[in-house]
Length: 323
Image 1: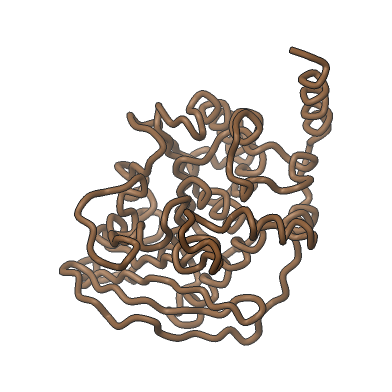
Image 2: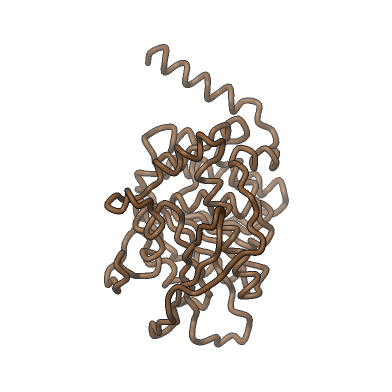
């Protein structure tokens, strides 16, 4: 270990040593400011498709500077409980976008085998939840024109935003809250669950912290420590938020979700967000919930698997917290 390694160690220790409480206003500052869109514009982009047990269609809502965010909506056909169908905002991670969550290939044709997203939206709707899956900027239909043959547009988007004092995480969180506006204005639901996988877990975390409309949160393949994940190996630039480590480490950031209900799931063999550090994060988050006398609101599962969605326990847990 040379002097540069020691410098980085001292830099990390210096930013985290003084953290006692987290100022939400400072958190929103490091994410960057995005102007409110008033009123939001909504519309349809794809006709209703009968998928057997559920219906699927695609809508859009307006974002900053006239941009439009496509969003799949999956609606269960039957509601045997007689209660209001719970709404869930599902946020994908790296891959080919919202189609990956709803069981489609990038070209929109039906896919017959799972990916690491494990057809999460389809799992949710089959459990009786209405699922909203926005196309996160930088993926799928929302890549830059010059990146059509690339996996994503994260690098160019992030660097342009950073140079303007904004962040890609901030823009994605802003748009996730726009999806909540759609759910409230069009679907007329105020209490919503959110689930995010991998990079979608960061957006789900920030959305749950900043928006009271989120009632319960599931984080899959994401919770860890910054030190043990994005500072330990090369990750996509969309994970990095300048100044965030001066405010908080990841467990304390996730702890801001408390006292809302929270479920964390992670694969034992996840190479992207290693479970060793996930377990350390879980201990710290558990302590935060205990200090708030809300330990019953936090649950977690380390399952046998890698960097992938499980859903074996978390999805039923989510449904139970929304009905």
